[in-house]
Length: 194
Image (tube, rainbow, N blue to C red; front, side, top):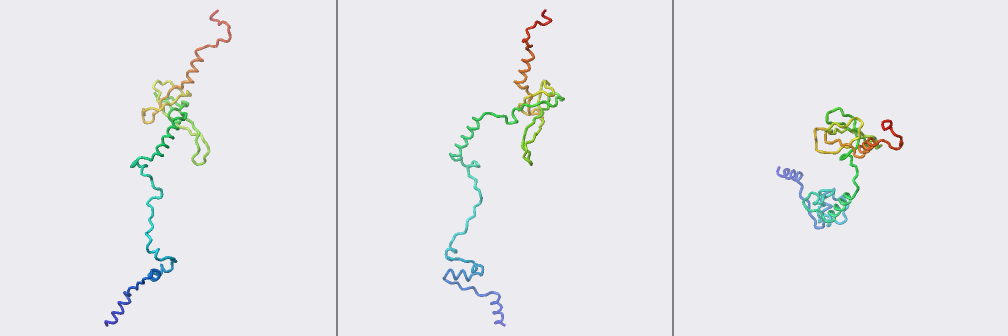
C-alpha cells in the first residue's frame, strides 16, 4: 500500500531536473521551446539585460510644456520668423476689414452685407464661390441696397452683429467730387446767365 502511494506521488510530482554546469546543456534541457531556438552563445543569452521599450514614440521636449525655457536656437528662430511676419506687407485677411455690397437694409440700424469669396471645395478641390451674410451696425440708417460698404470688426453689439458698416473712403469721395463740379468744357453761356 505504501509502495503504490509512493509511485503515485512520483507520477504526480516528478523529481527535479538535474542542473548542469555547462550553460548550453542547461538551456537545451530546460524546455523544449528553448531547445528549438538556435542560440549560438548561450552565456550571452542568459546575462543580457531585458530590452527597454521607450514610453513614447516621439518624445516631447520639456520646454514645449513650459517646464523649462526653450533652447537658444528655438528662441532665435521664433524671433526671426516673427520679425519676417511683421515686415511683410499687410494683406486682407478676410475678417478684419471687408469691402462688400449691401443686400438688405430693411431692419433699423442694421444692414445685411453679402461677402463672396473663392475657396476650394472640401471634396472636389475646385475653387467655388462661397457666400456669407454678415449683419453690420448702421447707426444712421444711411446705406441702401446695392451700396458698397466696408465692414470693420468691433465689439459685439448683439448676438449676430460684430461689424460696423462704414462708407468706403475712395468711392464716396469720388462721387461727391463728380456731383459738385458741373462740366465747364463747352464754354457756352447758360440760358440763366443771358
